[in-house]
Amino acid sequence: MKQKINILISTSVLTLLALSAIQGYLIYNTYQLKKDVFIKETKKSILGIDNTKEMDSLAELWHNELTSNLIEYRKNNLLKKEAFEHFKPYTDSLNDVFKSYYDKEIQKINLGYPIKYKKTIKSIVIFENETMDTVFYGGKDTGYFLFGDDFADNQGTIISKARWFTERDSEDDRPNEVLKTKLNVEVRTIDSMNIVGWKKIVFRQMAGLFICSLLLFLFVVMLLFYSIKTLIQQKKIADVRNDFINNITHELKTPLATLGIASKSLRNNEVQNSPKLFSNALDILDRQNGRLQKLIDQVMSNTLGTDEIILNKEEVLDTDYLNAVIEDFKLSVKNKDVTVKSKIEFAEVYLNIDKFLFTTGLLNILDNAVKYGKGKTQITVKTQLLKNEYQISISDNGIGMHETEYNKIFDKFYRVTTGNVHDVKGLGLGLFYTDQVVKAHQGEVYIDSVIDEGTTFKITIPIK
Image (tube, rainbow, N blue to C red; front, side, top):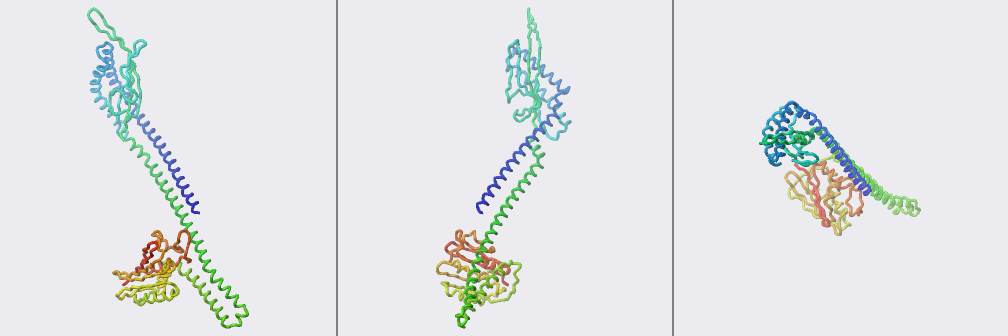
């Protein structure tokens, strides 16, 4: 059964992990979709800014300036590097105009979030007959910055790509000659945008999905935990029930067998003709009947909870009361190798207790000390006055118990085991009953135990 539960738990955990992975995958896909839609909508909103009369006028200015520099390059008046060095101050002077106009147009659109924009040149190629002269090539992740905010290419998203061609003839008047220069150039540009804090914006849009997913995940985890916990508790209850049935069956078999033998002997003529034998048989019947009644009463009374116990309290002097309990216990174990020592509080203390119930609780602990003893049993009973509390300590030199057993031994029907075997027969009700009685007196029971050295039970009850 334990192996099946372990398999079930392992399978449930693996299933939960698989569901979590699937849910994570779906959330990730949703995030990618949301991001793509968000960027697409933003691109659509600002795409028209570049196709205005103002932007066309600005483009014409830098086109002319670039063409002029390239013509000078073709005339061998400038190197490639010098062509760009002469071009950059001009574009820098136009950038303020570009940004001012662009910011104004963005405010008109009212996106609700800041956005950066830039225009870069990716390549410049001059064609001459069948040859090409690459003046500039930016590659995949680089380009020549023209206008806008100069952010890294990997931080932006491409809005549009453009190609423009220019064919221009230039003439230079020189003494005695006219020099003609023909320019056929292709320029490729890219417009990019950078949405500031776009991840936070997308996450905010998905906040409802994240919260619902988290709550659903927590609910499934809690449901799984509750189901496993309930299953383990049900297994524990089933084990306790089977154990109790086996124990009560064992306890009942002995007196029933004895009753059967005694009742058969009463039918024997020899026994019937002998008053002494007949009387002995009747005594056996009475004793076994009393034992059966005691077992039944123990099951009925010892299963009461704290709230169901009705106390008939009376004031008793601690010395007289405890000495009487100890003496009665000594008489019950006089045929066993048991030594009982006592050290009662010197000051006179009056205890307000239900004498019968409290005595039964103490005797249960004393009986356990004998049951779980080893060799010669030594029991020590001490009492101590602690402010407004009275403490009774019962120590033995028995087999002891692990700390993990401390809370379990007060459970109904639970009995301490050695390995997987119960060495001591019983119903597992004694300490449960003691704990309930002490709690009914507004007290507590504490345990201190060491394996192979012994156990100490400390009962603390309030006093006036």
